[in-house]
Image 1: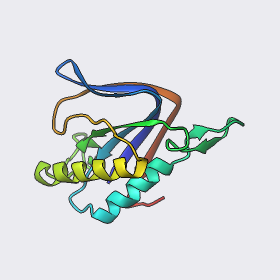
Image 2: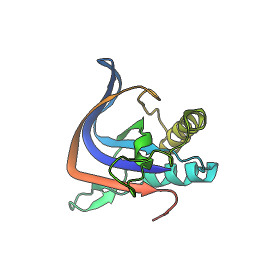
Image 3: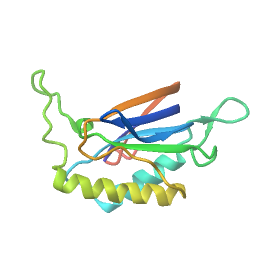
Length: 150
């Protein structure tokens, strides 16, 4: 699993002009799922995201997590995060899981992330064409990959 995480002051996802998920201050998480992802990947990534210290403490140092600041998370499925650009200029999507595997995995990750955070997390709509609106705060953008486990 690969996540692009952005610290935001607000974010929303729209489908066909209708808001289907929105948050105030917190994290916007774009999630890419590979066909080899496991329940261990889900658990590791969910724990990493809710504990990722990218929010400022009283001294202005990024030392607080989304859990610490009682922030929100907006989760959006994005298969293009698994693109390969090694050959030519047209990305290959073969590293991304097929929808029949990816959708249940996304739903399982969503449940695991909600459990880790301890409250509901809005999402986009799996497979839909979505419009994402966000105000990146900082800006802070981090890539977290369950294969690299950095």
